[in-house]
Length: 392
Image (cartoon, rainbow, N blue to C red; front, side, top):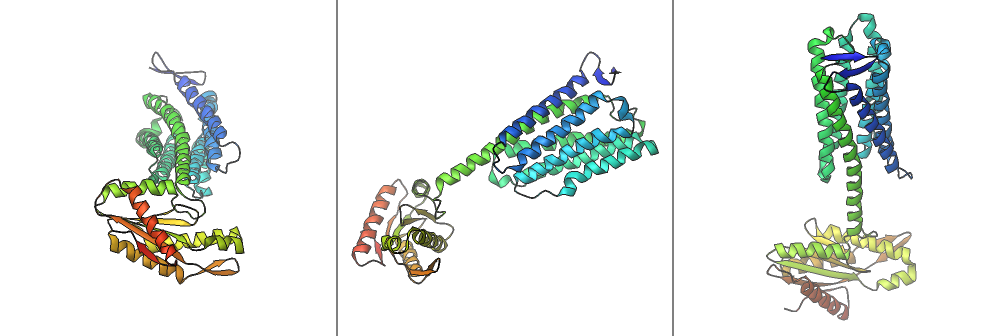
C-alpha cells in the first residue's frame, strides 16, 4: 500500500522512497565531487565541469522533490522539473565536449526553459498529466541523445563507451515508460509525481544509472588518456612516424603473417652538414618533410618508421625483392627531385637506400635488418644517392 508522510514518500513495509531519493542525491553529489577532482589543475577538459554541474542540478531537483512536496502541486513544480532537464542538458553537453564537438546551447537549455513554461501553464489549464508527460518525454529525448553521442564515437574501441551508452539508453527507456504512463493515465494522476510501483523501479534504476554512468565516465576518460599515451609511446614526436620500438614490433607481426616480406632502410646523405651549416631547426624541418615524402611514397599498406637520427625504414608485407627495389628507387628519385623548404632556405637532399627480403614467414627480423643495413652502407660507399640490394 502506498502512503505519503509530511511531504516525504514511503511505501509501507517494502521500500522507503524517501531513502531512494536520498540515495540518488548523495550518489550524484559524490560523483560531482569526483568529476571536479578529476578535472582539477585546468587540464582543458570542459566536460568534467559539465558533468559535475549536471549532477548538482539533478541532485538539487531531487532534494526539492523530497522536501518541498506541498508546493510541487502548483506552478512551483517548474523549479525542480526545470533543474532536472537542465541537469540532463548539461550531461548531453558533457558528452559533446568529450567527443570534441561544440554543444548547441539551445539544446542544452531549451528543454529546461520549455519545461518551466509548461509548469507555469499547467495549473491554469488544470492538467497534471501535461507536466508529468512533458517532463518524461523531454528527459527521454535528452538521455537518448546523450547515449547517441557516446555511441557515435565507438570507432575508438574504448570499452567504457559501451557501458556509458547502455546506461543512458536504459535511463531513456525508463523515462520512456513513464512517458507512456503519462499518455495513458496522465489526467487521472493524483500527483505531479505519482507515488507508485513504477516510481520505485525508476528510482532504483536511477541509482544504478547514477553509479554506473559516473564510474564509466571516469573510466572512459582514463582509457582515452591511456590510449593517447600508448600512441605517444609508439610515434616519433618530430616526424609523426613510428619510432624504432613500434616499427620493430609491427614489422615482426607482419613478418610472421606474410609469405614473403621486404625491408627498405635509408638515411639522408650528409645530414650532419645541414645541422652544422643551417642549424638544428633546419635539420628538424628537413627530417619532417623527408618523413612526409617517405610516408606518401610508401603508401597505406606499408609500415614506415624513423629508426634513428636521420635513418628511416619501410617494411613491406607480402612483397618480394623487385617490389622493394622499385619502391626504393621511387623514393630515391622523389627525394632527389624535391626542394625542401626550411624557413627561407631551399635545400636539396639525397638519400642512400638498402633493401632486403624474405620469401617465407618467420622471425627473421634481425637478419633482414642486418642485411638491409649492410646494403645501405654499400650504397654509401659506392657514392651515395643510390639503391643497393642485400647480397643473395
